[in-house]
Length: 181
Image (cartoon, rainbow, N blue to C red; front, side, top):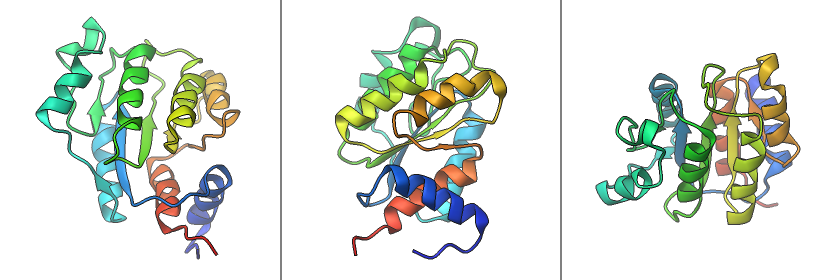
């Protein structure tokens, strides 16, 4: 694979150092911010990645597992916007569901500093789900000191972390473009 610039080079290397198996390019996105989710969809689209729409039945199955605080306000089409009221268990439920969907071959988790209900354990918890299910996970976490332990939870479990949405999508792009020699 050839990188066009430094951002691609770093993103490709980080992603391919964690995952070597190529993917088709169908992405599931889970976030606590609809705006960030929409930006991720736009960037995925510009790279030819598919953001798989979830059916009404799939949305209802996810909704049943969400906490009371977000059950009636979350947007579940994909990107899945759990809103700023989400807690760790909401992200765990959605990531578990997405990781078991054969139509989705990679998950992007967008985690933001103002999500008051998430803890520093979430990175490790989400990483373990995707390791168990064999589904690549890419994390977007802004470079904020209070998130250092969250970031380490991902990185220590072999999940690449990006500090920009563009770079997170480039990490997925690397997996799609990756072909064995």
